[in-house]
Length: 291
Image (tube, rainbow, N blue to C red; front, side, top):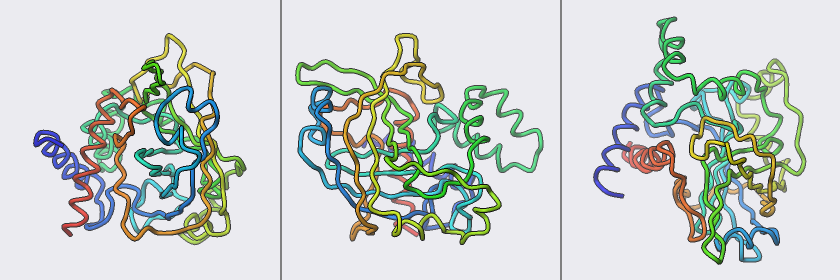
């Protein structure tokens, strides 16, 4: 990571910490979570799309962390917000959320988003939306979301486009999702708030083993490939394999997830947000370790 990228990441982290009021020494977002381990087994179709080792090896060990996005250490899993699932499978880090698209296109815009949502000025958030109409799609999904019954029963999306490169060097842009093989209905908010604040983490032991299908979503020609705030209209999907999480286990050394940690055979996203997230993740880890 060059010095300009480090400086940009440090600035984003400083501003994001101020905007979110994050607890010192803890994650800026996704503060509450639970770890699990398991493995990924690719489908026969996966190796035809990408030469990445995770798609050609029979099985790859996986370290994963489920999380609740907002609320900090004192939040409640039933509060509004989405869930996250970050996993490391070999040389691949995949960072996913339950929203299919993101609110903004850059790290700077994300800081503005949090400032507006936390502002005491009633005009701040409407002003943000006027300046960032691209946020409407994600906000629409967030507004309809209900509390999850379990981390293991919802679909997670990587909101960026990744290039899958085959043995001939041909690449195809896709979006990746993790779909539970046993989806679970959501809860009413009153039901969720009656449960312990960390009910999703407490529940995980009883829900494992749990399996997810890794799915590649292919775009239509008219879809905007590299805008993480835009839905794709394409309906074609390819099943890339099965993620099976077998038991809860916090690793001896915490995986330092990076949205741009990718193996040969997978091309990095081209949008600005993915680069800003990568830089901010690295600097956020330094901030936590320094506290």
